[in-house]
Amino acid sequence: MPKNICHSHQTAHTKMVKQTLKEVAKALAMPYQKTHQAFTGGDNLFITETFWEIFWARFPAESAMNAVYFCPECRSFDLEHP
Picture 1 (cartoon, rainbow, N blue to C red):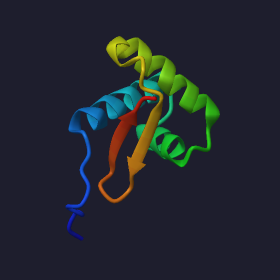
Picture 2 (cartoon, one colour):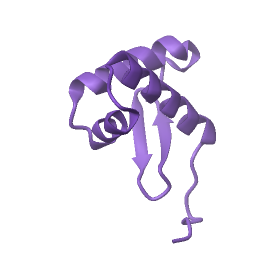
Picture 3 (cartoon, helix red, strand yellow):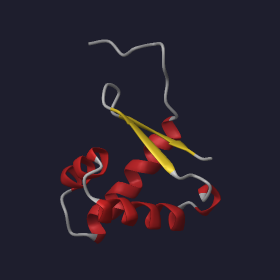
């Protein structure tokens, strides 16, 4: 299925989120795929809290970011701030 050209995502945001999720998986001794599923499914508050703690520590210049959106079609992430 071709990607929808009506929308785009920040490649840098996707890389930042995936790097952070890999660190979350390592910190919690969980497989990356399970961590990714739990995070994108929004069904694990502890994983979400751990994500933001690691994200803000890893990317202090991005401390205003406070929302992550996952596009299942593109399998990409976007970050937003208020």
